[in-house]
Image (cartoon, rainbow, N blue to C red; front, side, top):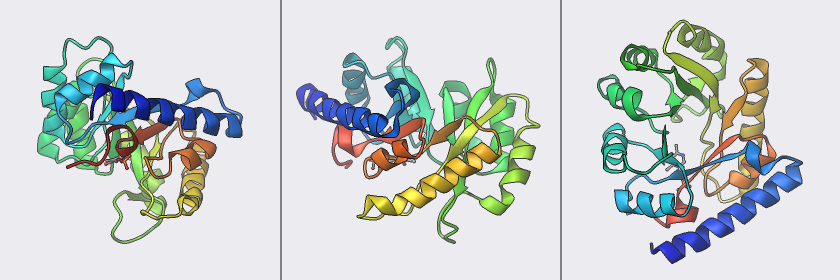
Length: 223
Ligand SMILES: *Cc1c(COP(=O)(O)O)cnc(C)c1O
């Protein structure tokens, strides 16, 4: 992906985000665009940063650690860990991430809190809204208990909920999942919603997403 190609894609994604905000009666500033750069090289992230992007999403703890080191001169860069993590790799996220979007395990939460220094790590709990056996995330029936457990940890702050709906060609299929997640976050008094990717971010914004995680629409297909 050339810088020109990326800029074109970014303009298009921005226009779509803006239109979605308008339809929903929301300010553009209420939605943070996370550029998902997993499996793309650090130099691609640098190009995106030079175009003004600041929030980057990575799925793998070591890849986030390495890119954070390689791009330490990029002023204002912000890292979002958006994928599952093993307890043994939680230290990389505790150190380098500004947000964690995929909290589903208490042992990981404990390790993140134990390793975190400085400001508490803002976290999203990933919820399995669809209830499918194969999907990751905390079941809605277990959410209250899990939030309570995480809230006892000193160096984490639960700020919202995250979900990945089952993939569908029809974006409207995602809407009920996003709406359910928004209902849950309201019920628990959580201000943020991490939902929507290339396929369905417009619907997610209409349903209240405050963070959207977009990879393919910006950077093309991953290898
Ligand atoms: C890869 C990934 C994304 C981005 O997906 P695209 O379809 O490329 O936009 C968003 N969220 C998570 C959790 C991911 O793993």
